[in-house]
Length: 296
Image (cartoon, rainbow, N blue to C red; front, side, top):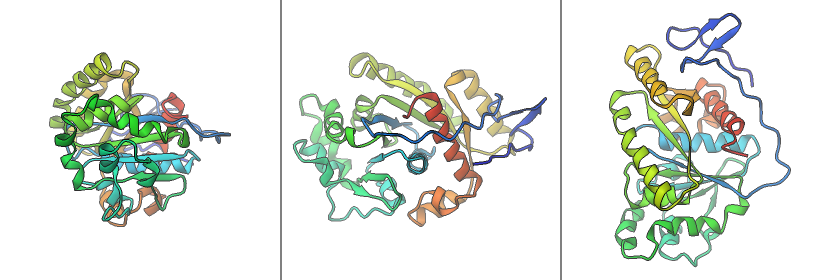
């Protein structure tokens, strides 16, 4: 899919024939990933940031849909009691088994709770407000940090990637998600207060790596809600690149009103407005993660 490098101030500039992206690095288009000849086992990625409103759910929905568009079989796990991912994909959670039921009864088949979305190749493990009681119920369980890992183990062979939309906290649910995951993707709003808490999140990931899941890696930091028209947004992105270097993904997600419009419609933006720049950005993110080896 053709992409054009923006020439607006703070978004990109041309050095010779090489376009420069908003992160200050050469802008790569990333090739369309080849089709897979077989599926599974899944690589599990947690989308995590303890600050709310940074684009975790939006990114989970649209990255999942983008990977599905490229032929990957994807399971999106709603692991936030607000249930925004489920609602954003038009999944009804009333009188429906959810991830909460699987946490309380790990012998239950997870396929009983998985729902097919309207997007081909994209399934959802939904959640609702019941999940808010999970930490209380799990606190006295043996190996309580590994319960989600045991749930996902039963279905990992059916998918190429499992994306976990974490709640905005660093509590037991988030630790479960990190323990179950092979990698972490950190959506980071281009705003100063969003940047402040990342050090604590990295510390939590390091503790999980040290004590529970030595294989977990940082798959990348994704700049979201970027507005090239504001000096503040450009300065924050510059500081993020200084702090995290090559861990910052080249793809940057801009701020747009199309995201809430798509959520209200229960569709990913790649279907709601496929030609919009935000839809193209998420398709590019999917290609970048495949190119980095984070996704098959």
